[in-house]
Length: 226
Image 1 (cartoon, rainbow, N blue to C red):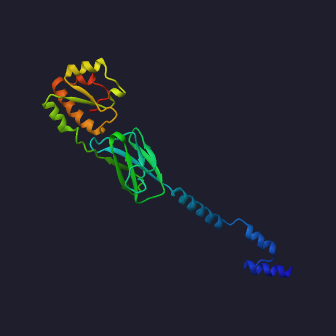
Image 2: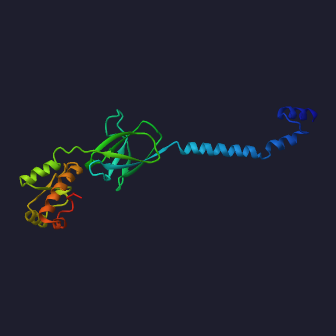
Image 3: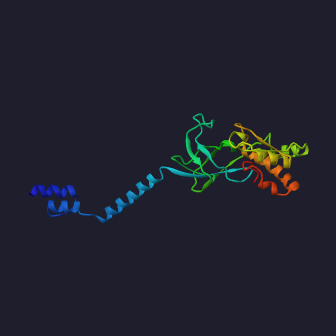
């Protein structure tokens, strides 16, 4: 017994009368250790929580300064130049999206909005909403094109859907005859929506000046000019 007591004293390094009490001290709850354990748990949990970074974005049109809705957020392709990389999220009806990534710096997002255009942008992590602006180059249909068509009396109103989905009716034909315009559709190869909007907005101003705003109540709903 004596040898055991001495061995226990030396192993523990404190002066206690016997091994039983030594074991009781070792197993007794220690407030300091509890505190350290609690701090360690919080630290590890915090690191686990921040292992993924939440990116929140909003996509807008540089031309209209309005949200662009319904599109896809991707990573670039493996070569870093293509737009066909991994899909990360969908853009909602308000132009917003949320993405979770492990990266905090040197992150590139591809924003693909079909009829509104695409962009690739490098961002750094922030806990605020990142605004992604899409600029569309409107070469064929724009304000200048609309003005030329007005001068030559070949006025068009560009339709988003057209005959393929929303067919022209007798009402549409009566509208065309009444206001001297032609509904035009791009079928399954439409131009960018901002370009349609620029053209139609200019034509709308012309129709307002000539006929007042009554025509707006009669025009097809897929003619975007607001």
